Length: 373
Image (cartoon, rainbow, N blue to C red; front, side):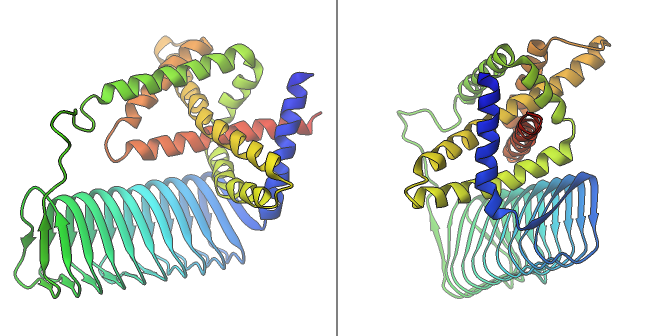
């Protein structure tokens, strides 16, 4: 009886919170191509995602490969392994991927992160640009300010106001034109190629150094990742011991990656907003806080179930067995995921993707469990 009550409460909570925000179109699958016009907000996720039809609203997309070719009147929120934004964006862009390429006009601000981030020639950000990555290339136009962080930062476009850079290497290409001041922090002087112009002058500041009596940041990364692995393993083993059937169903659901990722993405965007609105009403404070607690807990726990599914697949291949211990699968999958999380620049993309897949799978299972009561 306790399990039934919990599942029903969780489903009812999710339904109450997301019902006001269901004015959108969603698509999911391994390969998703949208060619028809969408007259609403669009949520799409899958292995390969291509959007060719215009979107009259916001566009939220996630996948291994994401190509956004059509214009969107609202903003764009996108994540993936490789991401191209080619259609005009009416408002702002928030994007993260291994490779991010913006080849179009963005109405307001752009916040970009990835291993390789490029604002291509001919592209324009209407207001401010914030970009971080292993390599950051600003070749297009920025309407106001630019804040850039990376291993190597190339500036080869036009920036209307000031530019601030933190990087190991800063390169101003011949086409660079900064109408304000360039302030940068780097261990080596900026490389200013002939033809580059900075009207407000170039100011170099010393790179920040940690105190000598403290270990450098990242000096003992293995401690952090060991603790993370132990915590995730504890959660995974506890879930298996307390709710073995539910844990197995969630793990199986993560195999439907596109659908789970899409549901996770929708909940990621809608539940916090609805929960905050409930808290603001005062009367809904307990429900709003409960929703935020369940939201955070299941988002983090989602990594465990994605890891378990990954571990099951690997052990079945290695052992050539039709079934494996769920505890062994959880251990193998979680340890592998934590190793991937530790990778520079792309680790957080792996973490976000695995968390969203597991998060979506959890609530899909919750929905089915409650609807069959």
